[in-house]
Length: 194
Image (tube, rainbow, N blue to C red; front, side):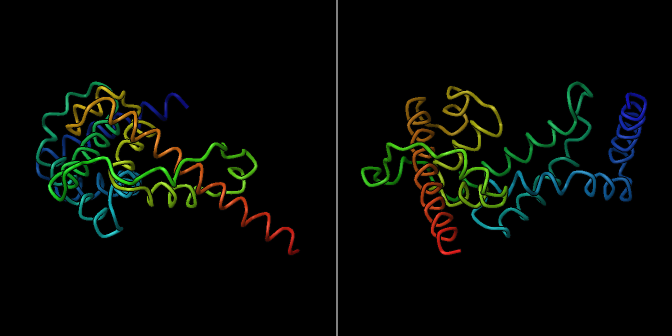
């Protein structure tokens, strides 16, 4: 196992060097290696599949342009992922300004989503729920949950206050809990029907 990881890293470093030298086949291999995972990253931040595909393409252009700046420290996949997140955020910033949105008086729920409902949901269902969040909430939720960023970092990155970041995350969680509870009712109705 460790030997195959070493061989992969050696091959990856060689592939990176070939990409830097302008080898189109190597660039195609690099794209094919990372595009499926990175498309999912872009999709979390985009409003549609088309926008995610555009962000992916723009991200790979940046990767190829700045590949010589990769210092072979840390994970290459992490470096690629960071570029994709930054491209997605920049595309969002170019289209709109971030403001707290949605009046949550109607959205607040005192009930937490139950684990049984979560076990019934598939990954695609959960991603779809996150994707339905208002854009500002979705961005903060993704950066906090999937990218592991702190509220201070999110606030700096998005040009909002730390309190707004915390509030948007809390509101996003509340909305998701409410949607999960709705799905739970649908599941229960289907079970009762059977």
